[in-house]
Length: 133
Image (cartoon, rainbow, N blue to C red):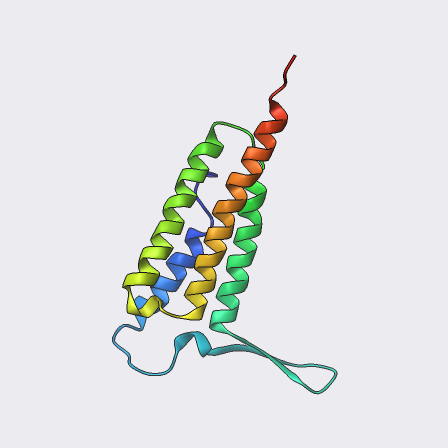
C-alpha cells in the first residue's frame, strides 16, 4: 500500500470532477469558490476549487518526497509507479481537452518534481551507502 504514488489522488480527483461535469457547458469548475475569509486588513481571501486541489497536490508531493528517502527494494517500485503517474499526467494534458487548464498543468509539474526528487534523493542516498576500502 505504501508503494502507491500519492500524486495519483489529485489526478483521480481532477478526472472525477471533469467526468461529473462532462455534460455541462458553462463556467470553469476550478474557479468555483469554496472558501472566503475576510482578513484583518479588510481584504477578502478566497480559495477556489482549483486552488484547493493544488494545495492538496502540494501536501501529497511533500509526503512523496519523504517516501523517497527510504532505502529499500520497494523504493524502486515506488519510482517506477511515480514514472507511470507522470506519464499519465503528460498524456492526459496533451490529449484530453478538459485537462488543458493551469490547475492540471501545475499538478503535472508537481508530479514531475516528485519524480525528479525521488530519483535524486535515491541516487544521493545510494552514494552514501557505498563504501570503498
